[in-house]
Length: 125
Image (tube, rainbow, N blue to C red; front, side):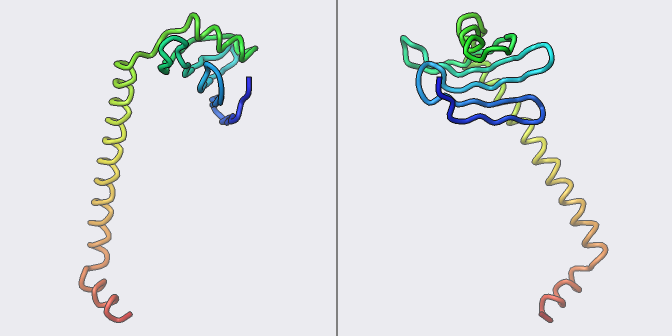
């Protein structure tokens, strides 16, 4: 198995991309008890990609990949859409919060420095 990319984070999350074969990508979440893997595989019959999730010991990457492929649970397109919808909703809430915070800060700044003063400063420079 050839691994072309591996990135580890301080939180125990590792992302691997496999350039050839049935395994496309894997994301590993690990702690002292083992690993949870989310893998993208290419279905041998349909050639379509599937996302599978499973819990494995985390001692042998090749064995863990095979275990999740054979015994893991598929994350169906419906579940994928739900996850994206929830994530998008969270992003929307964060954007709204930041816009509100910006408006409040701008209002405070406008009270501290009147717009006329800002305009006169712009004209002076």
